[in-house]
Amino acid sequence: MDDLPFASLTEAAVAVLETADPAAKARLGRQVAEAWRGGVLKSLGDTVPPDRPARPEKPELLPPNQVKKRKITAAPAGRAALLHALAHIELNAIDLAWDIAARFAGEDLPRAFFDDWVQVADDEARHFLMLCDRLAALDSFYGTLPAHDGLWEASQNTAHDLLARLAVVPLVLEARGLDVTPAMVEKLRAAGDEASADALQIIHDDEITHVAAGRRWFEWAAERRGLEPVSTYHQLVRAHFRGLLKPPFNKPSRDLAEFKAVYYEPLAIPLETLPQ
Image 1 (tube, helix red, strand yellow):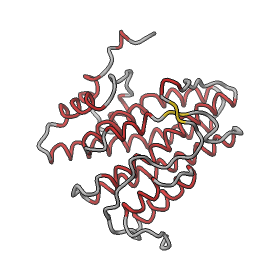
Image 2: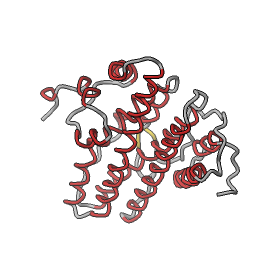
Image 3: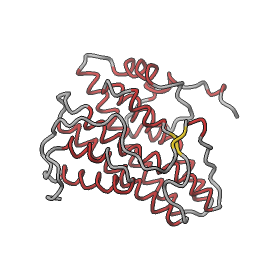
Image 4: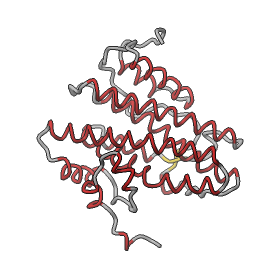
């Protein structure tokens, strides 16, 4: 780890963001996280992140409404399509975690803030590589199917404000993962794919800690600005997230993250209006 050519955490974070090859991005991110935790990287620095991370030529990025929904089937191709979509989410999550660490480094934040988001970035890299292993076991790989760019759009829409970023990325997008992943785990087990189901269970359990970090730092930042957290969350989500939040919510997992229903239920689509 001593041979990493970076003088600061933000310089290293930007290097991860500017790495186009997905597996190389994930592996470099894991090395940077280890260096930060081990004290090899000590300085925070002030390197400015790019507006967009580097991306490989494949997968082709399409508008969200042009990407087909993935259905879990017992056939390897059906499971691979689902895992590919999840791998794309995790690749974006790597960049989102490094971006928040670099983009807001000049805001006089405590060391613990960076410790948390470096850990999140490390987890997301581990998740991505784990999903790539599962794709390989199904004779596939990341890049074989189109994907969408909606996750990075959320980053761009909140690049101006740490509170907005925390409200939308961990507390809307990652929290949504807590809601939908358990059903995927069950369907994969029903299809006989225990290894993929186990991988998704690991991802779900780690995401609880990510939502908890988002909630903790959102409340910290709101308090520092003299703002009431719940009403501020409602205002920011309405301003920076398109549409309402979709129930049903995984309340037990959200509760483990201490993310209370008073935050998200007032922003929900009424259940009776959802298609049956």
